[in-house]
Length: 286
Picture (cartoon, rainbow, N blue to C red):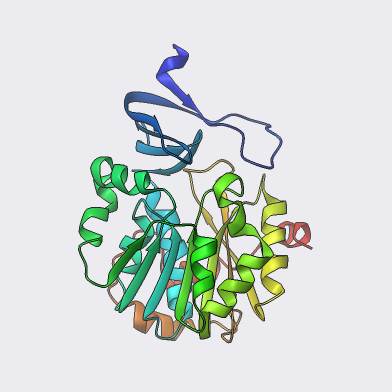
């Protein structure tokens, strides 16, 4: 098999490569560079279309719903009545699609790279970005998320950070100052969540997220989900809350709110079970 018919992911930032993940490519749909990164959209035999930034898969047509449902519904269901939401990153529209399943009143989508939005609308219709952006409650901004959040105090109910790995333009979104500004931008019952890498290769990233969040948020919790799109697959989401104890989770109340929400991976039971970490993970995170 010729190598040009395959896509192999690059090494994740901050890791020592021990293996290489490859997918057989049916068609190369787009390849180009924006001001910030290299962007590729490929049609693969197994994953359908994949969206790639700087050589690393961000999502696939086949499995994107797992990541997007988890990072969105975890904080939205922890909060008792989320109305004003901030999404940092997420210019592809996956998180926005899930957030709009809730009766929210206002959604701020802050994406640094306008090309991501343009290309997602054109080549990734399954993310529904074109229709989501038509809703009056959605406000789109093209700027750096870490700078944007500084302008607000006691304003958002939920902040969702759907960023790339901690390198390049995304690095400020993993620093202590950003977590502090996010804490200040949230209302008294505010909930924050960020993707924090996989448990197999990026354990130091998860530990750093926990440590930095605990400097400001009294309640911090890690959830996990099996995400075939990403190297290591056993992926983490680290959340923080200003007032709501994330350990005292009432699944009965969640089931009433969940009702007939359309999801394929997330459920009240998954919400509860995803927060239970195996003992050896707990030991790694000490």
